[in-house]
Length: 116
Image 1 (spheres, helix red, strand yellow):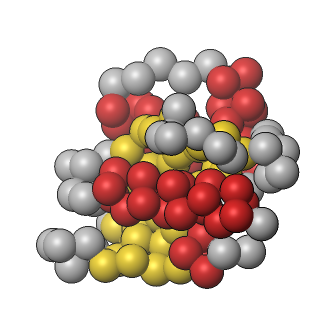
Image 2 (cartoon, one colour):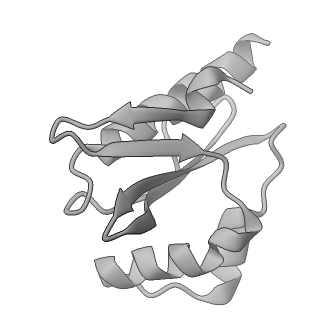
């Protein structure tokens, strides 16, 4: 696994976010992220976001320790060979700058796969 795909990053305000591969148990956390942002999310969409072929896509999740526990503050996806992510959902209010971190990790992950 590319190092940045499972690493902790410090945002400008000092918030630490862990970027990692998503897990099947993240569905409720993704639903909560969507709810905080006022975005409707169907179960099928959430299942799709968590199901992917790593040979074709880079999919990552960002968590931050907030309010006494870890919360998903963003996730994104990008096809290998793509120029930019096609899926990015971030809570910039809770974790300002998390979007830029996810975009950077996604593009590096897609580029490392292209180079391999």
